[in-house]
Length: 279
Image: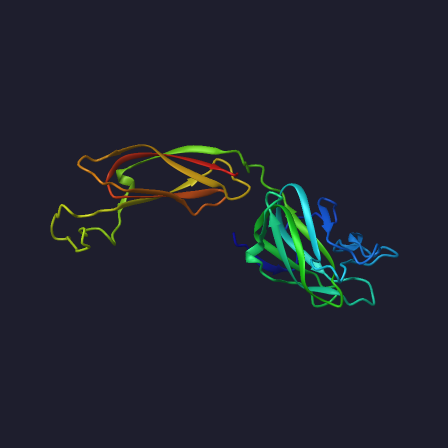
């Protein structure tokens, strides 16, 4: 899934900062010293005496990576970053990559591993907003380039997942009849050789019928579900043979999807069962 990532002057309204509020577990691949630890990581944290006003990675660390992990799926809506706050240390992150995991095992690059822009000075806050929110168990941050030394302060923002969201398997049925189908105009009135038969009633005339119906889930899923479709019964007009029916789910979101049907026979009625679930 691709996300629209925009730079903003701040996070979306009603978003919750999870780093400064201690609402997320943080793991770092390294720290330059005991005084350059994640204690200095929160975006607006005042400098602690004897400590850096940032997290500073080891220069020798090939990953320079942070993992922000939750125990439940969260709605991540924005990430903000700035450089090291204390003087005289002009240090900041220039470019970085974000990844996410839904199951804690498989990690996915956000937008194919897009390089996100960081800072050009120590104190300006750069905020990236995600649309739609990234629903994930954890987010990882990895440094690509930096100025001076790989140091940063940052904040990760969430919004509550709506109470209506449900990851339980959902099953329902759909019945369509002949009036729901339309003839495909681009291939109607063609015989088996592809020759137009518009002015006659050739017995070899091939007509295809199609239907697209939008299905809305009873409750929204936390992420895009898997859809299984099955035909439970079908009644077609007599004198049909060698029939072909294609049925598939398309345009799947967390809230709804389309059932697409293409058939070579004119159907009186068809009953379809769908099952949606997250593995």
